[in-house]
Length: 266
Length: 258
Image (tube, rainbow over all chains, first blue to last red; front, side):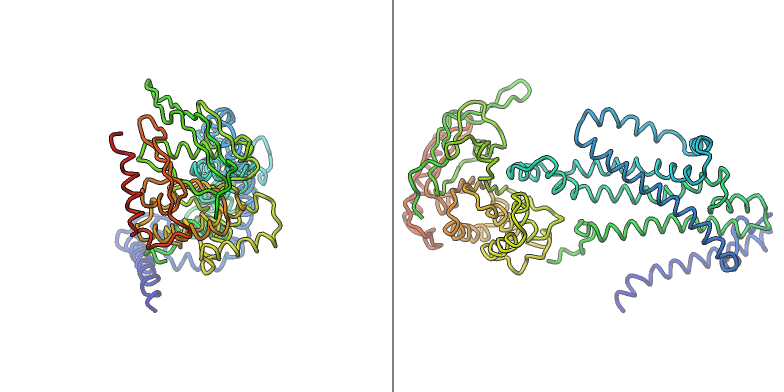
């Protein structure tokens, strides 16, 4: 009971309070201020819930299409990022060769790159996967490289004293030590990969949450609640991707300082 | 434990120079030392005397500028590649992602020993350092003293001929340190490795060693070799014996006028 009160009650009060405030603002905007298109600025929550229930099937199908493409691109980008990090940690030469281009690649606005990729590929699936991967590889490479380099000198010397082969040093020491870095990169990249996939869909695709988002935006105020629903689904997909990565991190690298119980209890 | 007369480690005229900016630092100057097989020796001295540098040269972690080192007749590199060394560093250097038993297991994995034999060996080592009840804990769940005991067990895992210890207990409080000194001797009496122990504590070096190599700074050099004739097994009450105090005083004299 104590843990319920201390852990869940504050956030419950917070969320309920926030929703009430939203609902009240919506009412004020609509009936007191009588703003034009008041509902597209702050829509009623109960209307959104009704839309969610009515069009739940569509939202789920389109959301899944977006998510699966984003996930595939994320996976490929993560693998590329991790391999790049290992290569860069292996040789300064490799880092000097690769790193400036990796940085430069992130200077290109995705908004501009997405239509180019789509124009070349002429396939919305591939374009979504590519953009999601493109967004993913950089934070993963950067954070994992830092993880690979975070190893203490004496930890390496210990390996050296065992006459360890270089690949053994990676397998037994550098790679496990890089896991916290890898996961912080993955956690940054996962929601971005979803956003990237949605962005490609806005360029003109057949399915995906971005497609119905755009369509309902064009249809105007009458489709306002559906538009809001797609935005919320987009946010939920990002949140879901983050939670999945966090869960995997808990299972793969539970030994990290941030997972230790506080209070210094032995 | 009687030391045989075969020299296990021979250092001949070892010198070590560092280049820092424009000045050249002489970390070690012409150190010549013979360490017998099965002997427990300490390298004692204040900061900057080069005792850790000397240990690192023995471990083949760094190369001396001049001089020659022989370990059982071979080079230090050959001895390292033959996995003859167990090293205990100043900090435990345990791998965070490995539980206690897995940390001890690490060198055994590196040697490619079969799983059943590894488990048996790890159990024996856990018992040796008295940590059976903690084998499934992560390093951060242990106290500093316990972590260092894990490090010792790990160093002993591959049954090294030579145990190199670089101020392993210097970060611990006096009580824990004395307790671990006694434990270390009891472990050593069972495994019989040659031990080179770096410390800046005079009583610690006397309590543990057969011989104490006293090093002086600026430049780092060997200024005296003190035999410790206290009988073995060493017991805690020896720390209060007149002979012990005499030895402390003798070694202090070595540092006078330096």
